[in-house]
Amino acid sequence: MQKAIFAAGCFWGVESAFMDIPGVKLAPCGYIGGTTENPTYQEVCHSDTGHAEAVEVEFDPAKVTFSQLTDAFWKMHDPTTMNRQGPDVGSQYRSAIFYLNEEQRLVAEASKARAQENFDRPIVTEITEAPTFWTAEEYHQMYFAKRGIAPACHI
Image (cartoon, rainbow, N blue to C red):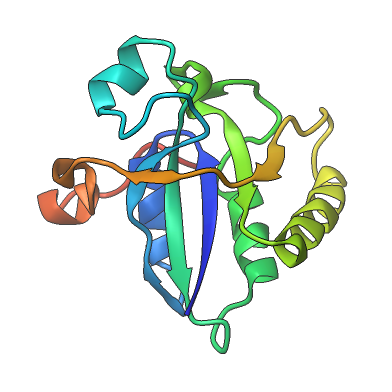
């Protein structure tokens, strides 16, 4: 198994979208890219911790590649909007790929260049080395599935 970390707006929808991909085992919601250790949802949403809502995708590379995951990432949100996805506004909703090694960085950069061909506006997604990923509170995990509702916050 391998891991990849993506931020594409509200983490509930991102988690749900990745969990629909064959080969993805887990996609827990969490926070990454900020300055506070072990942040809470309240801190991320109501103060300036600098974290993004993100998911840490655990996947079987024999069934789905990191490149295929990046292709899905570009389709599940609008990577041309800065710090916003739909009605959600703030830096915690930014678009980002947090790479875990040099190979992921190269694949992410190449996929961004390919994806740009599908958008009229520039992609603002950041591609940066992954700092610590902090798993979000339990009530955020599998949010839509636990409630039996259809995901409603992503493309």
